[in-house]
Image (cartoon, rainbow, N blue to C red; front, side, top):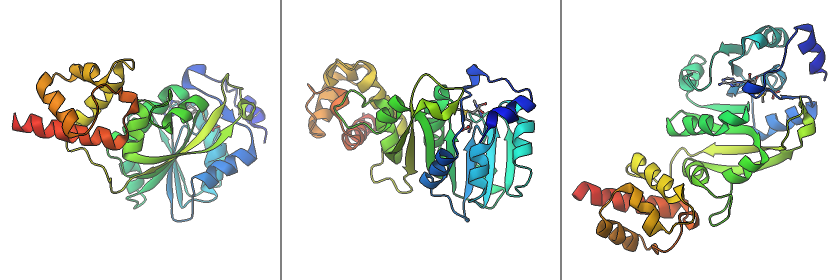
Length: 280
Ligand code: SAM
């Protein structure tokens, strides 16, 4: 594949601020489509199609592909590459603002798959928006910076384990599919990448009764990683005695650090705190 020729023909110039590093390898495109397990019944929403190479690979397998792209300069390139696909719609706009459920509903789909090679600076905001705002995506397959992929699927107690790990594993089942060297992109980025698969939980085995409180708890626990829970959770503004009781009831040693708590322990503690708050 020679995307450089296409881009040159349209006098396109890469925009660093939009994280534009395009995939230049056919084998990699097919690997991403396979990781997303796309089949003929699927509506797929692609975020950031770029020169539409992944888009075309997706459209060969899916029932319908909807691609959301922010950069107007890419629209003629996308339209040209996708001209022969009747199952394709280009949505011009910002993926941080679109209503994904509404886009899929146009094709009669209540569930859909998200696939994206995202600009690294919006990876976490986009993924958290998809999960926290209750969109009906059944899975999210995304290319992210390798270090970010490690953070997404880290084990409790490791350096890479953070608030984002806890949040993702609360909403979904995260797995790292494969690593991608920087040489697979044009222009070549300064970091290596990895493809991550998130299967969104339809039924959550662990459910925080008050998700706002649960989020504040996770945030406080990780805001100062060196602090023990006893100290870090002061930021929640619960009476010290109630906090102590809640930790004891949850069977969590207050001298532990937040980074050692599992998702299950965070949910258990949040629900006990919520009960105490409601009773107070
Ligand atoms: N999917 C293409 C590929 O794999 O070759 C391009 C990937 S490139 C890393 C990221 C793409 O996302 C670019 O086309 C960029 O213009 C687009 N983009 C950046 N911010 C966006 C946003 N907020 N909403 C939609 N698209 C965005």
